[in-house]
Length: 343
Image (cartoon, rainbow, N blue to C red):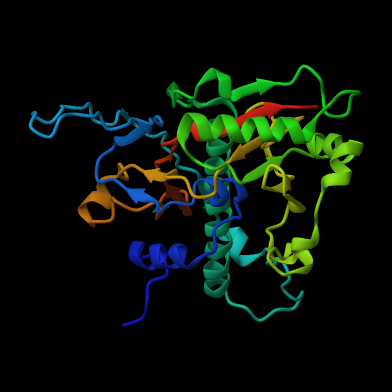
């Protein structure tokens, strides 16, 4: 029996085999195993670092009752994402596919399969870019503003205000101190979360200000590249490895990635002049709520991070292809991170 290209399970298998659009902030700081929920709500445990010590008692006295380590669990309904594309008969009959020879012998059915693959990739990239945007919002502001068709919510991860910093003296000004500031951010993250912030991801403006600082250039050590511990050629597009600072013990990256906002303007993922400092081994991960689609529920495919769907509007003779997802950044340790504006 031939495989139906538009069967949901066949499409889902194809989507799962695709390489996600590269998302440096997500893979660097939200690298814990993603979780798929079977409900439309997701639970986020927000963990605040504590350093309790066990109390002393005499050996013949009862044990001392101590408080449990605290965390706050909040339940959120993830923002729902459902982009779709249409495929008309004219697109398959009369239009040459990108890269196709002018006098190609491809049949309309072959073009349909190729068009579906391109549409998958486009929809998946759009969702991945939205996920990266959500992660960037969480890291740089401690919250995600979810605004769209019929939705207007704010997801607050309770990031301490002291972890969002604007330096009085910019790094490219006289008296700017990149090394001292990075040392301060790392100590702040360690004090409030117990985590070691070993990476800094900079905007292009912050990177330029740092590289223009004479004191920084003296202390920069790029020998780790030569030793093979970091290979810049393996980094994703839009990411540049600057080097490793022995003091305060931190890898430095520049991230050049943008998105188009609701007004149609292009914006950087990391706000101009800013940088994110944090650990690469935190508990943070992506969370996915259940797919709220009757066909997905009836087919037992509601607990996936991507749900492709295809249907034909008979009267118009048009095929629609959509992809659904309910992502939410699991920003479990907000005080392990610092966002600073330095330029």
